[in-house]
Image 1: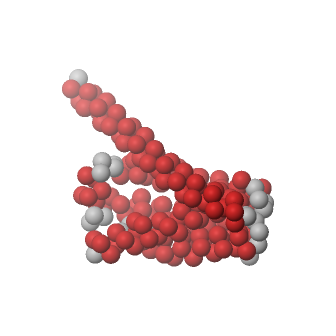
Image 2: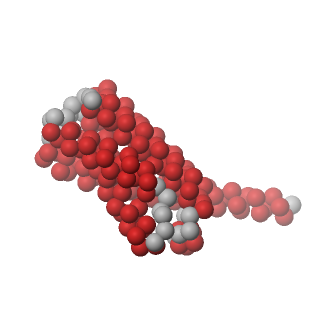
Length: 172
């Protein structure tokens, strides 16, 4: 299997993972804890959709750019982030709460094997250089985490603003 194809499979695995989370999160038994963190389900769905598009964009950039391209490093860094995401929060939340955390199945079925294989093959087949990935990988992980937090914040602001408009309309 070519690395570009593996990148696309990984990206579609991310889409499936984010879809599972968005679908199951509103009814999750751990939801009250999540709500205390002021994360609205609509905000999470917005963030998950944008992050899914970023994964697809990374796969496309790697496909058209080839070895040593920004896309090759971006998709490998994204894969690194999603492999870490399997364990924190998914597996950790499932174990700590003794309840299934949304996204755990697709994290284990798609993100762990495809993401791990993508990073391994990208390094083994010299699509990315280990010394450059030692910097770009963690930076990509941090960038994805920061983007996710920013998207949740933007989504929450939008939900709050919509709620204020709705309550003002109800008073008229």
